[in-house]
Length: 365
Image 1 (spheres, rainbow, N blue to C red):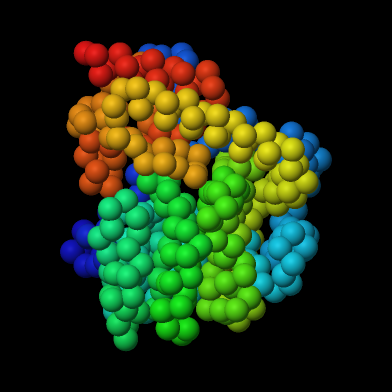
Image 2: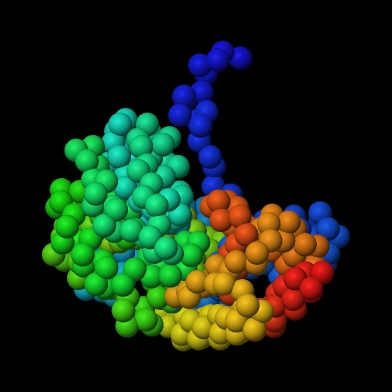
């Protein structure tokens, strides 16, 4: 095989590591019951209205979906008091981050972000020959002063995951206002708000749509995968200026959101009760874990997402393997070079208690 067959950027590209599927854990460890707390999924399952919407749509899957997702974009425009042309819908947040990179990045262009954050955008930036400028954390927070200091003539994008994944904490309204004030207007500011519905209960969490209305070079990314519980059909969306949305739409693919996914998203949007129950359960589960961590003397980061980052003081790969043997899947912090930390998704109260019991057992050993 020719040495130059593949794109040269692939030689150094580190792919994203997803949470281990339940089925794989069952096969590998011979376990029937598995508690998956690794991928920040909704433990209550999908909205019943989303399920019903899919069932109604099943007999139409011989037909291509609406390429513009017009009905879904219309509902989102109503929800956020924007226009349809301000919205791009995609095959989950991951695809939209790919589309953002493909819309803006030329070889040599730079993206400024944190050295600990969600990495999908960064992977695509490198794939396209761009460069990620990774600013060290300021304690457990994204260092916005450091972001500004690292702006150069090659900077195209600034990426802010808020709440930050894997840490779960937020950048506050005052902190975000500082970044917006100092950032040159020709640089595109991306707010990845996959956990928006959990975070907005915190009064210090910023309202990024107000920023968008005053700063057109802003992109807000949100998803149906978390609080709305339809991660398996993959739907996310971007709120941005009409100019950016127009250019992103050239890249996104013609039928990028399938017919069942569009139906499910429309159903989920109607089910605010399901989302309310999801958020309430999330904070009950977080409270259970926080109380246990404090009793055990474990350091953790206060979260406004549907996961928590905790320092177990032991190699995270070994610790996560011990949890797998007990049928519990979490994310080892070594993926982000936090080698004694775990990222643990919130589950039902029963699932959370099982995790706590296993955590205590392993620590006692």
